[in-house]
Length: 140
Image 1: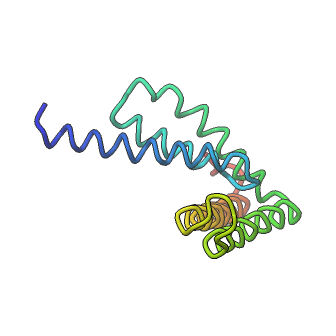
Image 2 (image 1 turned 120 degrees about the vertical axis):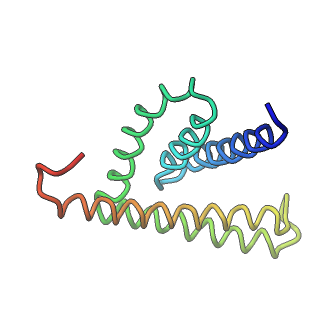
Image 3 (image 1 turned 135 degrees about the vertical axis):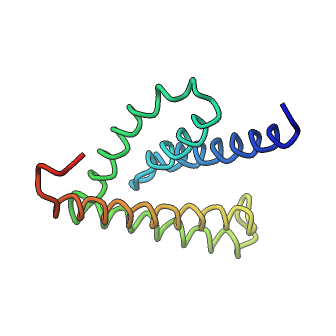
């Protein structure tokens, strides 16, 4: 295996692992963290075919979780509030020096988590809205 192929494999494995870890971290939030777990698995499965057997079950659960996360106005509000709380916490941790682990490294990771949460929430809402607009016979 050439050095270029090894570097590509390491980069793909790193990107997949990062997506997977961030997805697992986001599982504790009310947003659709399983979508990032799915994305991480898809990236990793492209280089490690043994992981392909986990993709379909995670895909099914991720799509169900995405639909559930936007199934009611209360759930949407909870997800938005969680994202705003993460954003606020990131700003506080970045600016208040007396907090444990204070600084912009912690603050920026919290802010990034909130942005990921908002992006996935918007994606989920649009996906569910478009699926509801489709005729019943055309759905996957």
